[in-house]
Image 1 (spheres, helix red, strand yellow):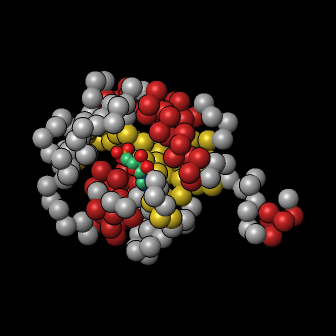
Image 2 (cartoon, protein in one colour; image 1 turned 180 degrees about the vertical axis):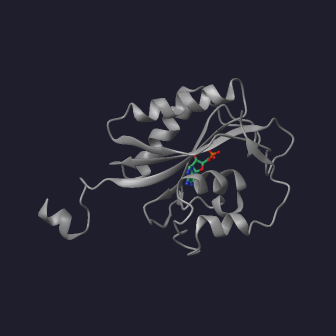
Length: 176
Ligand code: AMP
């Protein structure tokens, strides 16, 4: 224990993470809600806050249906890779299969956007999420929760990144 703490690895210290949740197949909002419910069944995860819910146009691969997207803020005792593994197991349980098309339709998508101020580049996990600063469907909901937090690499706030997004064609409206 003392050895771990001396390396800065206090495993009892909870971490703050922002997760993006999305779906564009079936009952989109229900898929997202079930995914977040599954997340909070874990004793290692507490839901702290949630953004508004958005209806968004697809980006990257555009020939597909619109998405429901939002962001949740959690407190967690899981390390980043364990958290990713857990998110993937929830996606799998929701019926997600690996898509034939990259960025194609998905029943449930759970991504780690930020994890404390961590900067990580592993083969299976990049934090901050590598495309987060270019995506209105991530920045807009994060700004609902914490507009003043800084991207740990770019050192710019979420509200600055949102205001300075170049691409106008990323349609996003509140989901009613
Ligand atoms: P996706 O199609 O969005 O579910 O992402 C596919 C893969 O991206 C996952 O299986 C992860 O290994 C990898 N990945 C890299 N960075 C992240 C991240 N920050 N959050 C979620 N998945 C990530």
